[in-house]
Image 1: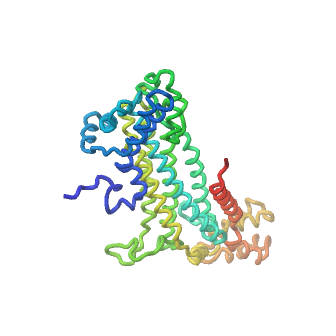
Image 2 (image 1 turned 30 degrees about the vertical axis):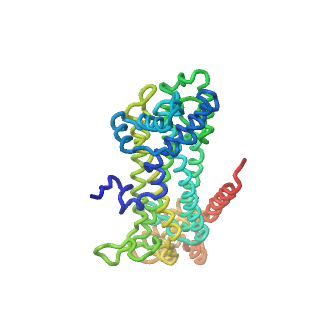
Image 3 (image 1 turned 120 degrees about the horizontal axis):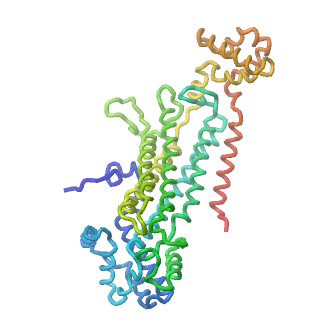
Length: 461
């Protein structure tokens, strides 16, 4: 009988919709056991270097422990009995390693190994996420560059407000991800720290060599060395998960925008087309925004992971009870959701279909009313700002009532006609003439992106 998937991340139908194979591999059973063993080996190596255990024993552990075949059935039984897998893991490794196994897990506690393993997995997850994030930013930079000067209606409160460009919209999306990439990089040294504190965090079991062992342990793993034990100070991991949730949120905003712009009545952009993608089982005409919907769903789901991590920060005394367990649920979920969102965003944005003609049609649909502000500001030097506002407001009401364009309504207002000639009024009523510094702002975001790409090729130091 086939086992039933317990989550969407395991479901054979949905697992590559909500996440990615690469990220699932980071948090697989194989990966977590490998990380536990890696932490135990690094501890032995560090203790061999510092003379805490015989160097020969450390070398034997490093040589043979990674190749030990674990009895996962027994490990499952031990975990259910003890509540944690490390006691059973150390027992099996020690038995297989013989005499050197006596020195395995010397002076450590279960949480030292499990926290360090989590950090090792998180490091691999962040490597994947940073690469995905770079790809999404590259796709957005391409859209911003191509459509720097493509005018469209800017909308506030779901109503047409003022003209913008699609490049400006894409650059706003990109700027958010640029800041998030910086936050992700800044969070790494605070989150990717080795954990070694012993039973109550004082390293008492290692005597006066505790700090030397911890430094060597961190070096062996390529992780940052903490100043002090962080068994119950979880801010580093929490910060990382919050950052991943914000990445999901930023991508959810992009998905929400694309979803709205795909509406039949707007039709300004479309997700990439492939046969039957987004199809309905009953309505043949449908082309649903599938990637956008997943981006929105993942953004909402990631909030729960972030909230759970925040809740789990409140831990009791020197070693936590239940709050620590909450992280086991929340941290992998945040990584899986972020990877899934980035994959969906990359697919959607790299093949996004942009319809400039539809953007122009929608922009012209108000017959110039979208640039009423431009007319008001153009009239203000001659009429004064408030009088100009009142005259243009009256013209807008007149245009609505008669169903014609703003220019026609303006020409029916004597005060306006006496202030500006027809050609200047017509120029003010052209939406593409009222884009402000949209292009210049796009250029600044693209320049930042170019600098990021250069730094990624030639990092400092």
